[in-house]
Length: 602
Image 1 (cartoon, rainbow, N blue to C red):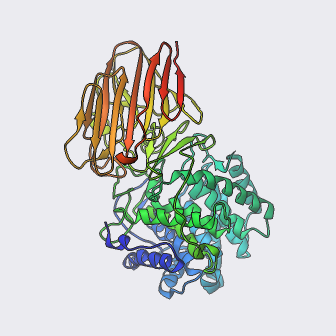
Image 2 (cartoon, rainbow, N blue to C red; image 1 turned 180 degrees about the horizontal axis):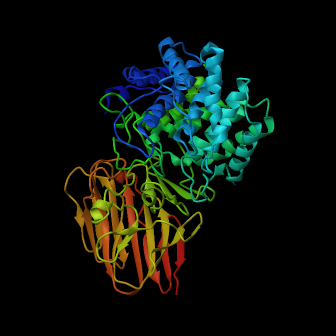
Image 3 (tube, rainbow, N blue to C red; image 1 turned 180 degrees about the vertical axis):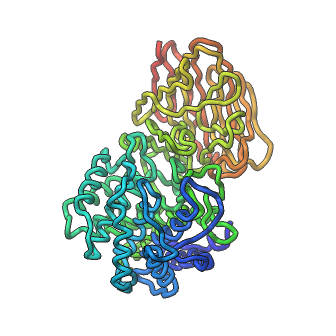
């Protein structure tokens, strides 16, 4: 645990400001290399090296802008004033360049635009007329280029709002068309989808709602109707997003771009910035400060005190192709709170502890069941109908049966051997005991507040209908498999922190206990053996070494029924009763908090 992170506090304006300063101080030596750039590492991305350095420099502005609204830091202010004027000057050796369609720098323009909105007097007003023209012209390039049809269109909205506020040429027509596109993605109860209807991840809170709330704040007078609509949607979303956290501050690791870490708290920050009390201020303060504190208890800083690429530790295995050494500073969006006046009620109230009486929360537009166990110290997510393509490890990040704040999830390091694939929390199949195929795209899905089902086809002649029934610390899996080829099968529980070698392996069960808790999987029907596997290191997002309980089976050509009970128990003293499963003709009866009857295909 890093000494800096271990002493960071987030419960008052002074503490949050101090934490921001201490974290940002570690960047100061890197600013000295070249104006308008930060070279923080050497690994590559899908975009070029110079873009990586510009990205790192501009992403820090998500925090610098809010910080400078109420703080005087002439050195940091000057670093950015000089870098911005040089970077937008086409005659400068440090010019950031002309952008192209789908350019990464279109993304990075948004933090610069927000900074100009927040601290115009410390940036724009200090520039010469030529420097102002250069800056406006560089930003205005976004209006002439194509972007993906997703959250990126909000970047153009923020840029044009900034240009409008600076009283220079901007495009109201593009603001309207971009916001119309974003509005077309709205799916009710505060939820959007991010382009593809199958993508509902952290880009909804730290993207759609974050930008919407900025718009609602700075455009409240010019566009009151839309501003109030954005606030109303955020209020609805807050009641759902609340369930993504646990009592200890952790949020569900799920989806892409998880190296942005405490950007998970950015939505709560944006609510306060927009003065939207979607939940009592004390609850919002608790959610924000606990998540921030959680992150700085993890090993997220390099030896230089920089934010690393990874999740709970430095880890390139789980990273996206667009994660550069500076990308993690997207997390600085959480520091928007520093732009909230010091006399705001948020800063005065006490944290309210996390508490919910809804032990199971169903969100149809969020496409997930969220479960809370162990007196809310453990939160689990059961997603359905979610998938993203052309992203690294998309099946692992979106399509497992369950995700956990305490056990995390794993991504493959390689694919030949099962242990290299680290296919936890999912069923996977192979025709020759190599290159196992997990559930990826849901061909069809259904969900209620009590269960989820998926139809998927790992091969053309293999179809699987999986039903998942959450039962507090446990969940039941029912797999109906129709295979026209020999199949090797692994049904995997949660990966668990590898601390010692004691484990339980029988023909019916596999289990492993660590200081985190107990991960177990028990056969009800159809499996041959329970074993505990050691996956490749650095595949799990929370722990760099893990053990994984699994059930194995070998299936001849035909129709098969597999049923298992999976446990993720973080406190034996508080654990819920294990569900009882009975098979009666064409029905599976589960007796847990409720009695459920699952009808099987004939």
